[in-house]
Length: 216
Image (cartoon, rainbow, N blue to C red; front, side):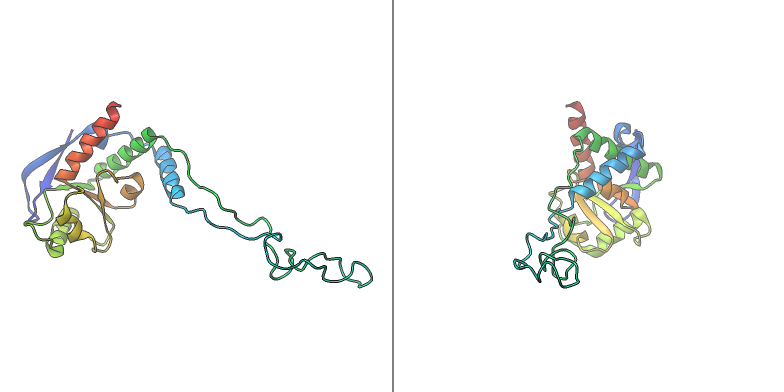
């Protein structure tokens, strides 16, 4: 296991540490697998509602524009043919689903690889909390986050427990800070962020959840 110092709500790094299990944070980084999972996640986010009208769908064009022979022009059967303005579209997009089937074990392995990569570069931090008290304070939360990651000019992913309303309300409007619950943690958001910051409560829940899924 890898020991990581826990940053307190005041931004200080005490003597307290937390153990990160190797099966999650020291896993093999399979780049092709991670790429496949990320592409599938982005594809699933597409609506697929795009559509165009063919010449059979557009309105009008029922009458032949001019007679077949004797005009010196090419024969035409409808003003709604694709070559006319206002005509139908040829081979246009139609509604479809972009969902790719990705087994749960592949998603879990990709997430472990992404987290392991971040930890290997010292970009996984743990905090006991962001605010000392029961009232949300963005200023205090940002100060703790700055002491954990240093530069707040880069994207930061904060993993908080679903019941931790203080953290959610304190960080929800901070630029370049994305807050997720431990059960929403995914490969794409880990890779899209320079640092991953767990609260102790969220880390405990995530490790417990991962252990249960691995035992199935």
